[in-house]
Each structure stands twice: as structure tokens, then as C-alpha cells.
Image (cartoon, rainbow, N blue to C red; front, top):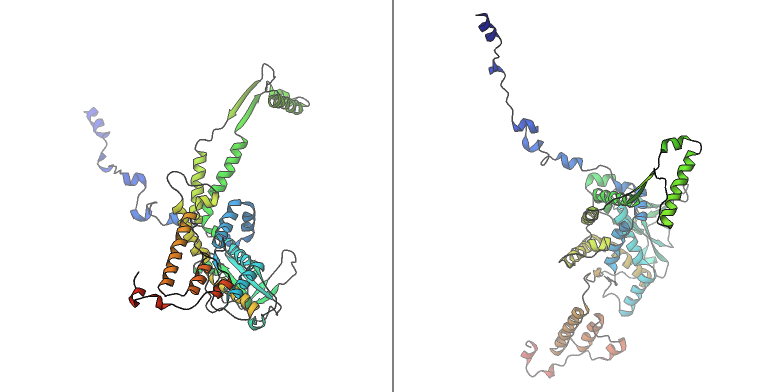
Length: 456
């Protein structure tokens, strides 16, 4: 009877100890699934964003531009491509042929186009470039454009850190201050009136960042910090691996005791030097029978492919083709034409279109300095970036020539007008004397029926 009581006393009631386990608690999924899920949580985007503005740290940007060739390429090449092969077309009806030729020559000789290119470069690198019209007039007063004819006019390129806007934004600042604090810290700078300043801002920034940037834009390298960091680290690791790719391991018998003896370090160093010299010169090694020699070599499998993928990330962030930035052609079945077409679109949207106002300002001031007049009808035009083959270019010229001759045959254009157009487009070149000698009248009597003017 006692035995049964003890058995009943040791019985455990499991009805109150039920364990409810599940996959949700094991994975730590509680509350709102869509908020807590790391794949859908907005906190992942926050963790991968940085409040640090590289644009405000112009010294690291300057040294990065100086030290990294592909950074220089990313900035300089897109600007050079925009203006390559006389890509900027300057044409106006306000000037005759000789005056227009003189204007183009002055823009080239005075370095106006190169100054514009420099300002765009600094706008890409620092988020803002500044062009200064330097004249004989007082720089602190508004520019008197009527007094420019025949006087000195030189355009100076600068950046937002050397030429500072005196206001909350360069667009509404009434003056700028040109400084040279690097060579003369006591120099307060030269105050320049806003009418003498042309600007080119970098990447447009939202309000909060624009306020921190004093109205300027962002450096193009602001958005490529993650892939750029990966690239620089990958190249650094590669260099370290190259240094350690092949290591000679020399095991010296009783090394610890040898180091504890007088001049032990010198003896070890001498032994290693002897082994190295014999290995390099005689391709043989002499050592004690108790010593040992081994060689370790590191393999680089997978590293080149990883570097290429990182380079593609850098190109995507900069919006530059791989062939343009790293000088490597397309592989596989791709000819690279699609990449170049996309790149040409970027050149038009990021360089040519934003530079329109700056170019108009420079050309009008140079025209005032040469002829005393402005060009109200001048709008910068550009040559297509796509380079055609000689065959395609010849076919286009032949088609244009046939079209102009047909217009002359139908009496829609005079022969003189056709000669002028052919010369302007470089299809058939006529001198001014030859064009002046060509008849500028129509000859309707050559048609038997007026309806022949409308049909081929």
C-alpha cells in the first residue's frame, strides 16, 4: 500500500507544462511581418546611407583627383567628348561670314572654350565651377558691356572654393570673392560683381543638402562612394597578394638558441642573405642538413572576375561605359554601340545642355568686345557625338548634294543659295569670289509647264 502511494506522489502532471513551439518564434518573427522583415524594412536603406558630404571636403577630392587616373578620366573625358572635333557649332545671322570667322578664331585664340571646359570639370568634381570675365573695368562694379569694344577681355576659370558666393546661393548672390589663401593667408580676396560671373553647378541637390552646400551642386563622386571603396580596397588587396604571392620559408635548426647567443640576429640575417643570394644568382641553396626550405605560392583564382564586377559597379554609378572609363572593349557578342549611344545621351543631358547658358554668356561678351553688338539669335548647337564611317558619311553627302541640286532644278533655291549651302555643310567648297560670281536669279522659262515645278 505504501509503495502505491509513493508511486502516485511522484507522478508529474504535464497538463500545465505544455510547450508551444513554432517556426515563427524560432526565427524571431514577431509583430508586423512586413516592417520587421529585413528584406522589406526601410532601415536597410538607412543603414546604407551616409550623412557625410564628400562634396564639402574639397581637399580629399583634390588629392583623389590628383592620385587616381580613372577619376581624372571620369571627369575630363566626358567634357572633352562634348567639345571634341569642334563639336560646338557657332552660327548667327547677325554677323557676316568674315565676322563669324573672326569670332570663332577669337574664341579659340583667347582660350575661351578651354576656360568653359575647365569650369565644367570643376563643377563635376567640386559641385560648382566659376567663370570670371576679367576686364579693364573696376571688378567691384557692374560690367558695362557698352564699353567692352576693343578693350581687354579674358575669361578666368575657377571653382566654388576659390571664388566664393557672397550669399546663400550663387544664383542670387550680388557679388563673389576671389581668394588665394593658399599662398597668402592674409589676403582678403578680390570682390567681383555678379555681372562678371558665370557658373556651372554639379549634380542638382535636394533642399536639405542644397542648404548645406550653400546653393551649389553635388560632386559626381558623392554617389559612387560604396563601389569606389570596394574598388580601392580590391586593388589594395591585390597589391598585397602580389607582394606575398611567392614566399620562401627557411627553417633554421635551433633558431631560438641561436638568437639568444651574442650576435645571434646578425648571424641569422647573414644566413638568410646567403641563401637568397645563391638562390637568385646560382639557382641553388646550401644549408645545414638539420635546416629546411619550403616555398609557398598564393593562387589568384576568382580575384580577376571579382575586380571586373566591381569595376562594372563603378561604371554604373558614374554612368560611364566600361570602355571609356577603364579602356577595355566590349566582350562576347556585344559591339559596344548600345553603351556608346547611352553615353552620348548622358553627354548631352549632363554637359551640353547645362552649359548652354554659360556658352551664350561667353560668346555674347566676346562678340561685344570684337564688334560692339550682341547676338540675339545665337543658340549653341552641337555636332552629333556618333562618329560615322567614311562610307556612311559619303552616302549622306551624296544624298544632300542630290537634294540641293533638285531644289535648284525646281527653282526653289537659286544656284547661288545652293553653292552657299554646299559650302557651309562642307559638301562642295566654293570661295567667296566664286559664290559672288554665281547667278542669284531664277529661270522659270526652263520649264514648259508650271506643274513641272511640283513634280519630279
